[in-house]
Amino acid sequence: MDPLDQVPIEDAVVDADEMLALLKSADPTQVMIAARAFCEIEDARAVGPLLALLGAGCPMTRVSAAYALGRNIRAGKAADGSGEDQANLDAAHGAGPQTASPETASPETASSEDVPDIVEALIAQLRLDWSGYVRKGIVWALGRSGDRRALSPLLNALKTDIAAVRLWAASALGQMPGLDFEASVKAMPPLIAAMRQDPVAVVRSNCAWSVGELCINLPSNVVYATAVDALIETLVEDEDMGVREDAKAALLNLGDPRSLQMIEALQSEGLLW
Image (cartoon, rainbow, N blue to C red):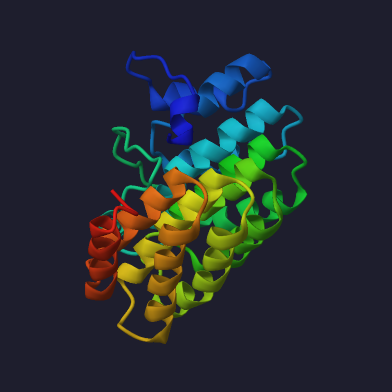
């Protein structure tokens, strides 16, 4: 499930200018409403106020700000000139195992000097925030960034954080738009390790999905072969049926001949369905 699905938004059309004003309201409830609105609205003018809300005392305000920044992270990057072409990013940003793509308004423009560095601010808050619920939202936002600076914090979250955060870190690593070869190679060993060893089945499942996604853009080299072997091992050995199914789906999606033969052999022996 996409974390934005957890943030209720009224069906009525929302006025961006009105919500921008409410982000600076003295009424915490109005601030919350506005932050949630920007989970649906893309507007670079909201980035600065939303970043300020990452330091709010209320965890619900911080998590709403994190999700809103995740929705607006490309609008901010487009405004400061640091992002790639929006169409290319959208093409590279595949749907994750638990993601959705709500309709959003077209991003408003803003000058580069008005747009702070969203990724650095999110990384800093990820290190500091005591709330796992907030850290989960930050991890999701970083996964949408496509920024290599987010890679190490996401890998660290996958290794060390609570299960809910590890879950989203696992899927975020597989859906980062435009992740290059070097970054994919760096992400693969921790993902494989978590796919094999994490005590929580849904985390292992998301790792399997991300391993498969990263393999799609890898050449047929030793890293690719190691990842496929790990998926096959998970398919055969993991104790959880859901994890095995996700490993199988990743292998089928890759279409690797060796893994397809393995799946066919296991099915013919009645060990897989």
